[in-house]
Length: 154
Image (cartoon, rainbow, N blue to C red):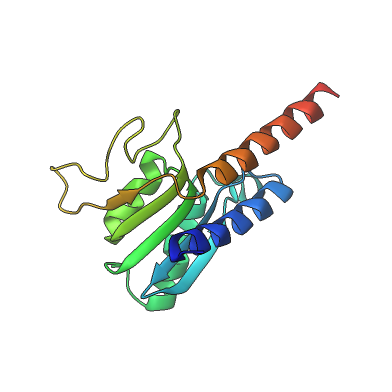
């Protein structure tokens, strides 16, 4: 398995944890120099916090772990294309590269709905690579919402 699939698999494990705990199953892993610095998953429901997306939580953990808000050499792996808030946080943190699993047709800010990663007006750009373990990421989200709808019908 290549390194991108390996790190995305770790993000998928985090996403599965989120789903088991009632949050939308999105997971993220932040990597510097081939080593995992932080990993996490959505906690919006549990924390009752609209900013508790996997990416935000992982960026915070990594900044604390590394002792710097500038994450210039960081790669972030996320199961779902980031929203504008999360991509904005990545820009602020100076994340180098973003790898995501499945595009988000409703809020994707890395090229699907808007492309903040390459906006020429910002002082930083992020290299973006999508489609890493795309089917696995898509299926996890799809299964979560099928189960949620079934519970709502009862």
